[in-house]
Image (cartoon, rainbow, N blue to C red):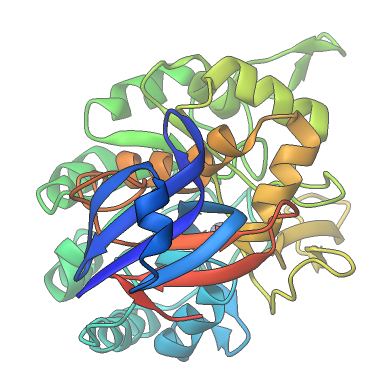
Length: 382
Ligand SMILES: [Zn+2]
């Protein structure tokens, strides 16, 4: 069965205005210009002339959908985000889950992944080995425990694709050594590790800065001499040529100011920025505010203070915001939302771009980045 899609095809190298994507079963077999002959034969044609034909989004950091937290109903969670063009998703466990809850969540996600239609491509463990000074909810974050992580790795080692940690905690090097045997990539987040600690963790597979410019700090403090900027996690990730920066581009620029977003894109280049939603609530496609702000438990004498607690974003909304805030075009925005996350996790041979041989995970988008069609493994799902 051959399917052909007409549209403005977004490849990693540009847009083909009179583009054609040919799909055989679940794979892309050809990408190029369409001819008069292609148009005359309407068999198996999905005609989206005027729309962008872009790679399906890959969201590597997402906690919730319409059906609640990702682990409560992993299938419903992934289906919800499919509505917004996410054809590859890492349900992201919360750093405040107990050990038993983590094991149960992993089991439930593994069951959901048995469905051949699923868009779940693995799991992101955000914690629990993070620095309790940083994060919206700070309990029960705990010290690195070999007994605990061995059990987690036994349960779901190769399904876990990404693990966020604070590399400055005792025992992380041994942990990274154990986990990297499963091909797990690490991300530095909720941390105040020094640049040297981060650079040495790179050798164990630390490749990503978790939601850059959010929820991490500097050692010893952000400003010395009442105004001299200290360097820390964010600056180390910005400087390191091989590290990726996750960003949450919410509409009002609350997680990342538009100017900061431009600075990150400028420092990292378009090949090392990853758009995430970090959704922690029901994403409604961008009407109203798309961030969550809660009362946090601050570990300071001052007590409670407003804390950011993820977003209500969808991937198409995040892409739209990225374009608006930084001025990047659709080619670069699609790269940040699809190819870069796939490459960071080593999945780019299969997904992340519209290129022959890859899985046919494709979205049709309007100029306003509204989702018109979603295809997973060559099948139209929306
Ligand atoms: Zn998160």
